[in-house]
Image (cartoon, rainbow, N blue to C red):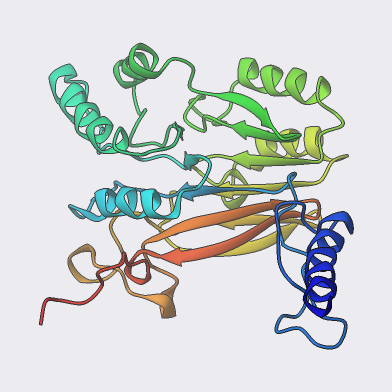
Length: 292
């Protein structure tokens, strides 16, 4: 009888954990006195999700760095990856050169286990031949999508000769934003940091479209990490994922100068994106040490 009573208490404890709404998939024996854990409210809100951002590969790319980032992204398993632009060296009108460069980057990107969203930088589109090549291989140079009620805006800052975003692109995003006013957050991605230069008129116009919603902005191009606050929102300049640094022979100057190769890891929450900078040199697989 004592055995049956103990068994009943054990089973009841398991059932109570499941019925309490803590975690239906969790089966664990609990005690009324003490338990070797803090609590059982697992951090697994189904509305939260995680994705990664990678920054400039080119502008004097250092061989092997971007490919290393792809291998490490496959270890981390984000739901998807977004590029901030500058994937090829570009700055040419020779189609054979462009095809070779795009073939090279695609051969690396295609090793990812998850979707990869392209975005153009100045090294990807800098003339009409390169713009046509982008259209031929990748389609639209700007677009948006919504995932779990979060809106992603992928801009083309190479779209206008002087203001970076032409009227057609501005109208496209205006319509997209008007049609999706109730998303819980808006994330804006661009290569050139429009707020960071003197060409403010065009970006201030875009900011007006975002004024009544929570949003966060990500850009690259400068190869130096910076965080700033504008209009109460966070704006990030990302460092590099293979692009050249400002040190001798294009080497990165290090954390002291905010120059490093990284993957940006975003956890999307009800309070907005939580951002972690993962330095490539700190992401190791299960065999980090050399053979003895």
